[in-house]
Image (cartoon, rainbow, N blue to C red; front, side, top):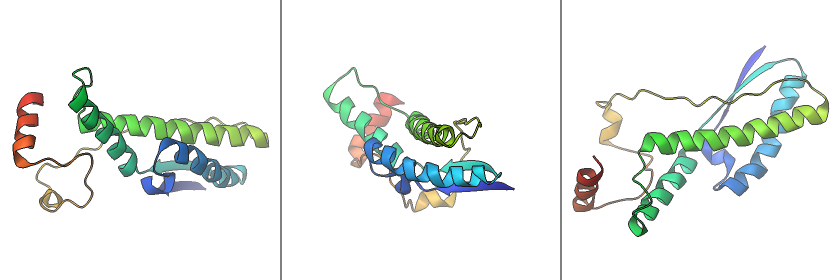
Length: 144
């Protein structure tokens, strides 16, 4: 059977250290399914992680010209990359520990979002820093 396991970003902890701990338990459960003969795909959220990356770059840009403005798409890719790495390593380590010879791969994805989506009129999940209208206009002019 093919099984899709969906993990919310909040289930992975609030920082990379917590995430490393969380994926150990998660990997054991996933490998249980694989050991039973199932094909498993793991999908995950990244809200807290992408917010953490975005905030770090936002804050860094205020103290150094060497820290660039980071488009949200890059923060998303960075979060997918390190979440994927943590999951991939934990699953592969658990497979190897059990003597199950399977490959594990991570894939970074993109989602096309309709700029006219009505959800933009009432955002529910803010990411990164909050700015006054004046600050937002200055940043938009500076960073395109």
